[in-house]
Amino acid sequence: MKKVLILGGSGFVGLHVCEKLVAHEWHLTVLTRRMANAQNLLTLPNLTLLEVDVHDEAALTHALAGHDAVVNLVAILQGDQAQFDRVHLELPKKLARACKAAGVRKLVHLSALGANADNPQAAPSMYLRSKGAGEAALIEAAGAGLNSAFELALLRPSVIFGAEDKFLNVFAELQRVLPVMPLAGAHARFQPVWVEDVAAAVVSCLERGGMAPADAAPRILELCGPEVFELEDLVHLAAQLSGIRGGLGRPVLELPEWAGRLQARLMELAPGTPKMSRDNLDSMRVDNVASGKLPGLESLGITPSALRPIAQEYLTRNQSDHGVLGIRQRAH
Ligand SMILES: NC(=O)c1ccc[n+]([C@@H]2O[C@H](COP(=O)([O-])OP(=O)(O)OC[C@H]3O[C@@H](n4cnc5c(N)ncnc54)[C@H](OP(=O)(O)O)[C@@H]3O)[C@@H](O)[C@H]2O)c1
Image (cartoon, rainbow, N blue to C red; front, side, top):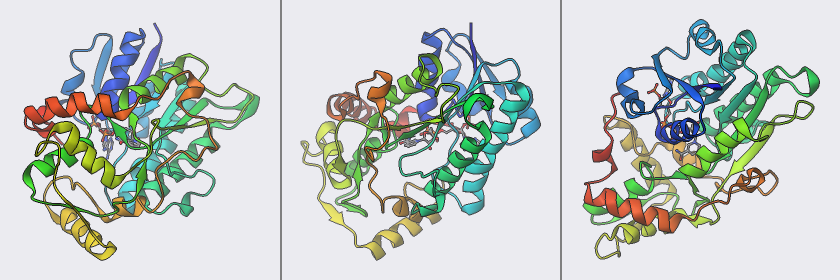
């Protein structure tokens, strides 16, 4: 049985990646900062859960020993420059060094659409700049050609939808309680991709030649669904598919830039994880759609799934269960 180590396996994408890898008969080691955060994984067979500080390079190297591959799903959506750099740049650097030290030959890294390894600083937000810098560091550490230290796959998804997403579910929940939907970046464009397709891409990269051959450069894939939506359309769709106000939802109040930034600032100041930050707004300055210059899911033999039928099924269920926040409470 092949062994893979997963960082960030307890998260939204992580659960689906772990389920698929188990079904494909991998043995999994999942590292978590706190056991309580990973309770959702406890029922999976062939999975060892370890409480490890993934930012501790020695601990990471020790944990990696004996594994054939590693998948990095760790990321944060909000933070300051130092926090983004620590998670999106320093952690990948440590992981690359740990792979070399432990002799791990395959690394699959989840990045994000809009990250630019060639010119990280060209991206519009701290999130995307740090993601691009992390990609560049991994590409440099992996090397290319016969002397490459490990095979590298960089996956860049657009926004990801699925039963536990904090995207369509949040739009639906807000419209259940608010009289109007104040919305910044209403015309930002996205190409949502299903979490199961993202998980299938990770498995494919590990198993079926998704990785670059030893004599080629690291493989970079853009993971997108079949349709492009404006943010405002997705807000309407979330209400329609969950049947809020007979499917009509709430009127959308398009916020001008200054009001959107003020709203985001207030959300940052509220207790808990903010639903929106000013840096998130900065990320939306560029369309979150496939560039057309890089291979996508189809190159792995995966047909991207349409959003509507899948989202309808889980939004209806989640809304009758009082929203996704009621489904999955996690300790932080
Ligand atoms: N969700 C999307 O729409 C989307 C879109 C584009 C790209 N992506 C990328 O896909 C990957 C997975 O995303 P996701 O939505 O599954 O994320 P997620 O649900 O937030 O999970 C990320 C995991 O990373 C770990 N983590 C969080 N902060 C950390 C920190 N400061 N230090 C160390 N570990 C930390 C947590 O695990 P523990 O609590 O167990 O330690 C958490 O479960 C990320 O790289 C993300 O950027 C996601």
